[in-house]
Length: 208
Image (tube, rainbow, N blue to C red; front, side, top):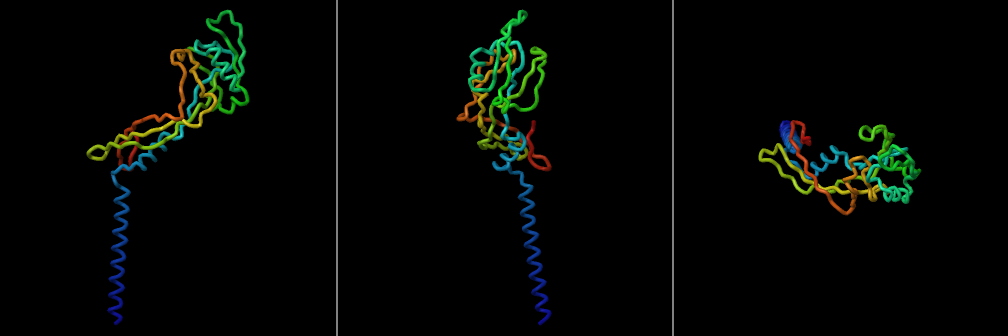
């Protein structure tokens, strides 16, 4: 009787061990799968590019030579929004109008980082980076995987969110920004991107 009981226990133990081993194998195979799911691609892209991404632009401050495109209307627009104060200055050697620009307390809320100094062609000019918006990840729209499943091209969309007052009719105030015109930040428009992913021994990575 005791021998039969021990046999049953031994048999049950073998079955239990077999089930545990099989389950572990399934988990291991799943973890090492070459398949790139949309959820995994989303996680990789968000972590790599650090979405949401702050969008910042340089704004010249202090006494400065006014760039061609830094029009009176644009300065007045920023002033109307309560972001800056500016004063026209007389400068006999200036090729264009000179102004002194300072940030208000409201404008300072959108400053990212410290004051910088520009190089040529605006050598010595002070500037700050101001936040205009954020790039927000939306969704994966397609994955095109190679035959051997070691490479994939992933398409996704993003859009601008959390627009600051600086984003309204923003213009690049660098010397060569005169030809760029206004920069638009439309929260309703979706933008498309594509990234190249490669499968390594430790998983998928974005190829730069």
